[in-house]
Length: 194
Image (cartoon, rainbow, N blue to C red; front, side, top):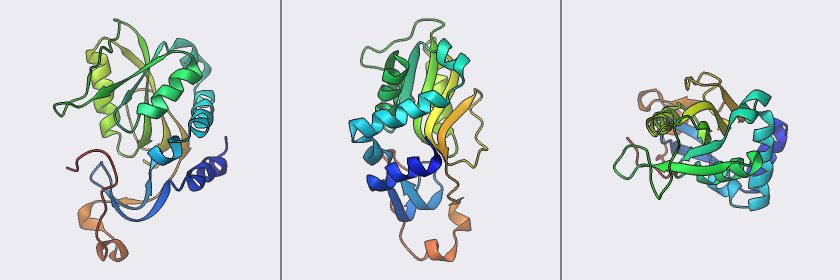
């Protein structure tokens, strides 16, 4: 799936928003990708996951026997990636502020895990999810996301594949351009802001 086709999926679902947004990373942006909207249609979610699975290196696809994603944003794409790769999918969540497996989910020592996110900007939640997966006995062999907003700079400590790389600029609070500084920031994500 080419970048323009992926963006068409986001536009068709009204998931590409413009304004002033405070991202879960703590950075500000004039663009926000509401992946929950693009993934709310099961056929679209399946198409995107199948395209992302096809982008994974062949040796990674062969190794993976579990998919784990961080809640909330990664739950749907993680489930669809499990379907695309024909492996079980589960998620980590933060009941007390730190990711952990719950709800009867568990990993066996040495499970080969693909950690799947919806969007990666700084990689903070991805690294936290990877740490929780490893603490639970899994070996994270790679990470994947629908969208890489890092400009290709994110380092998760494992091979990383994104369906599309979007380079919408992000800003620290003290470096906002005038057009963003003049409007209130909206916090559209599911996670409490820092």
